[in-house]
Length: 92
Image 1: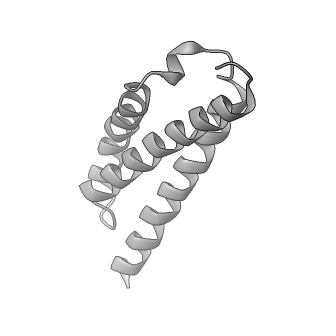
Image 2: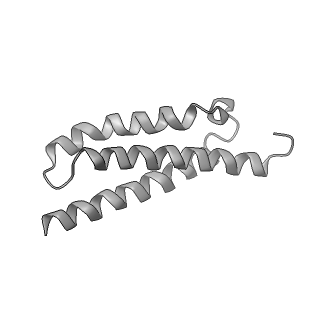
Image 3: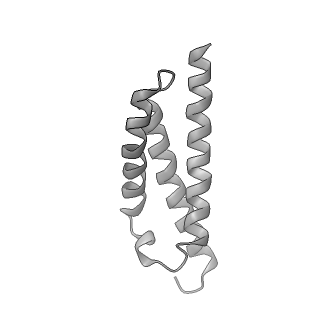
């Protein structure tokens, strides 16, 4: 039962990480050029994973793969948000 709770927590954190990072990039970072670099998703995903590692070390239901999944989801959200901006702005 505790494994199921951990699995649901990991996937919901990944979904929220993706959705919130994509929304943040589209609304707040619209005119920031650094978000369009190819290293921006890697940096954001790595930072999210490093922030999540101490949290998952304390919680027994989730582990290190959950932090990695969150980092991947945040990186994908940053990439998708950047792509959305490039599609909306003319001449970018």
